[in-house]
Length: 96
Image 1 (tube, helix red, strand yellow):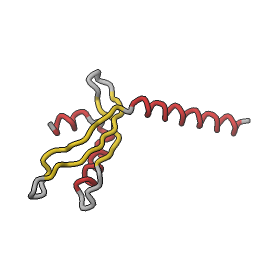
Image 2: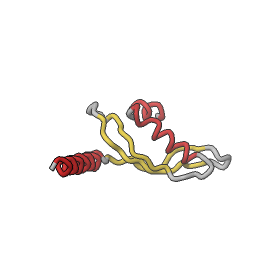
Image 3: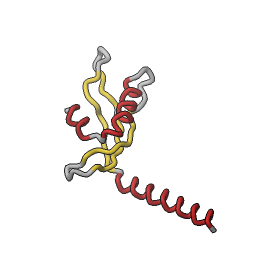
Image 4: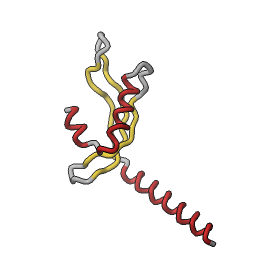
């Protein structure tokens, strides 16, 4: 259910997901694409990417979302490691 989805989205990421949905259902009808953290069945939060679009009935009402969600935790961890390494290198150069 939609409520079950929201119950699993990290509280800090809810505004990002809401904004992506609003852009999708807004006048521009942009494709739904967003990255956010979601509570995994293990209880930990993992990063996910989601993309899709709504199926609309003839009266213009959304019936369901069609798309996919994929785990991007490893990519986010790699990005964080790279960012931290670059910051450490910059600090080392500044001190030297």
